[in-house]
Image (cartoon, rainbow, N blue to C red; front, side, top):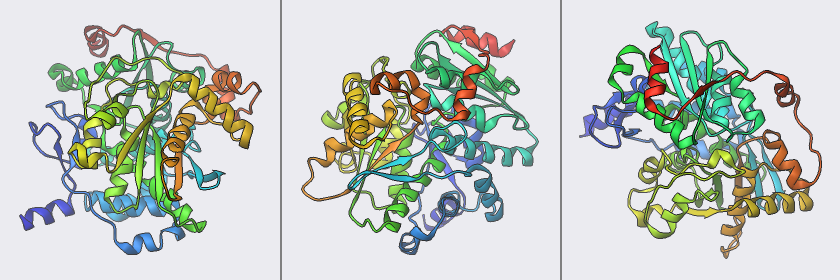
Length: 445
């Protein structure tokens, strides 16, 4: 057993959560995305970072944090200097922590090229895949479903990457205008499919393609959704960065993170950070009316349902893919899980009320998803007897939801040039039914 542990510490070996598929290396997990048994890939071991890392973390840059964390997770799969270059190509922007109120901070994750938190995962994955492809001289076809921000981040992250073709599936009428333009206007190696259905339908089509033997034999299919383990690794970076910024500012109280959640990859990444030693008092899983996981955290009963449309569309998920990962990372058993994760949810009326109240009181403009997280944080911290540092994640720039934001706030807001320029571009998308036979026929043609 000791020898086995040492082997797995040196090389990242991953298993399927359904335990009916062979173990794989990091490279195979990255390109396969989904195990043949329809489980999810998880690493056997998640290392604990040394105490010295946390003692000095306030002196490290985002890139330095990202390198140390990924080096610990990936072991010797990638030489240190190559890994450093992967990180430096991918992580070229910051995640600033902004004080909104005393002991209440927003972690802004929208300073990347697509102005959404998915840039961290998509760019790191693209850099990692490119590294492996250069070694193998393979070509791959990436399939990705999006409820909003994933598509734009993947499109930007993989645009014109040699050896990679990308097909993005998104639900018609259920993403914002700017989100749609981000994934339908690049062209090149990026193709957008507008699916007549919900995000869950898009996700089902992608999963079905990965389990189809004919498609797998014809194409080297890969996924860029949060079902791909290489998406979760870089999303852990900004939790460490938030802690470093708090420490640098002299805030030493316990830390609570509230994560606006849809597919639950973001929260799973936070739990990875916690398992690596990041001192987190509690995670709050904040959702909209698609509150399947908050219901589970309150009752112990997990009951997926068809997703419902809301103004926080990136969280319109009725059967979160990463739920099993969240369970495993938080302790597997319900009694253990609720020691680390609690839930909260908001309907559209509460979301709008929160956006307006925070803007009127502080001048801070939030997208609907960010407002859901703020409200969830406030609900939780109001129950605590002691002071904590509450951090809520802002997963997208408010201008990506311009109509909702301006209508809710009753005022015009500033739109960054990189987003406003998109609106003048022509959308190019292929119409697609939610029938897998149609999707398969399209891929085979």
